[in-house]
Amino acid sequence: MKNFDLIVVGTGAAGTSAAYACRSAGWNVAIIDSRPFGGTCALRGCDPKKVLVGATEVIERTRQMAGKGVSCNDVKIDWPALIQFKRTFTQPVPADREQQFSRAGIAVFHGRARFTAESTVQIGDDTLIARFILIAAGARPATLGIDGEEHLTTSDKFLELDVLPPRILFVGGGYISLEFAHVAARSGAHVQILHRGERPLEQFDPDMVDRLVHATRELGIALHVKTVVEKIEKSSAQFTVHASVDGTTQTFEADLVVHGAGRVPEIDDLDLETAGVKREKRGVTVNEYLQSVSNPAVYAAGDAAASGGRPLTPVAAMEGEVVAANLLKGNNRKPDLAAVPSIVYTLPSVASVGLLESPAKEQGLKFRVNHQDTSEWYSSRRLGAKYSAFKVLIEENTDRILGAHVIGPHAEEQINLFALAIRSGIRASDIEQTVFAYPTGASDLSYMV
Image (cartoon, rainbow, N blue to C red; front, side, top):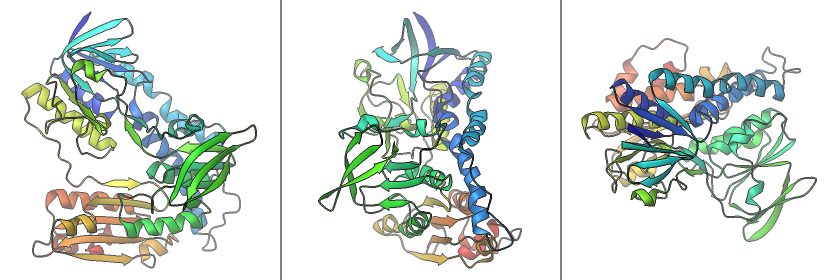
């Protein structure tokens, strides 16, 4: 039996930030993970995904400039070589992360953790007791409850494919499916997406998403909406997916079927009931300080917490810092979830921060909407970008920015500037009067407000 001040379950952004902060304050800290150390972002999410997207950006930019002084006849993705390049980023992470924990004096444990009492967890033969426990175990693909679900490949495994199958089908129309579909299509695969809703990416602005849908289909991706997957069958030659479309059954064939229909907190096997930890579908039920509402010794952060934050790495890291501050000084800090930007790394990319039009109207806010197609703007034309637009919500009287939504070649950087403006109270007129370096993506902001 080993005693600690803090036990952290999970080595992702939330767990890591909290562990280091508490250890720096002199606490005796243990950290646990059943997977290789590093968490989703570094190993199975943001970082490796962006490596693949970066390669396909070369393909897309070359295609867009075809006939404009650039020849693209011989440009293509070498998938095995790309995956090997991706592994140069991911393979060193687990050992490096474990060494960093050990050098900091943080005790490391490998295995599945489960509660055996309110402040006690078991990992294999090790029993750990602590004053506090942080659950930051991340997320896993949601269970869909369909026949043949075991035939689905996860996004984690997609990132490890040594060979890209010629026909790939994605179940679900969220950001994972769209991002990986764009990568696969530009790498030479025939791609289909089956989405049960009326449109994909339901948390993003509909007008921006409509443009992305057009770009996706133009790329050759067959995107089917209002299509409910009911069964997946495997034969020696292929997978057959049975789906309901407007009350009739249709079949779709593929060499690989990928789960892109959402993720849920990976906390089912922690035996939370044993510790008296209340949970809900979104994760551990916490108060405004990220403390369990039913067991004061337990906190939760990141994907494991029902905190209202989006499942994003920067949010998880921030929540880990919040937990550490509350552990070290008593509950004094709350997560600040205002103006958190979110990006879909397709090509073109789609980005959003702040309010969408419908919620803003429902709140009774009075605002004007600046909405324009920017495909003919210089910043788009010089890159050959066909799909480019923005929508900015500006409150009347106060001139404050309520929300911003962008699609196009500069969206992922522009949205960060809009996030800064919203968080800092920078008014639309302040942006309009700012002298930006030109020509840059940032210089477009003064024309968007």
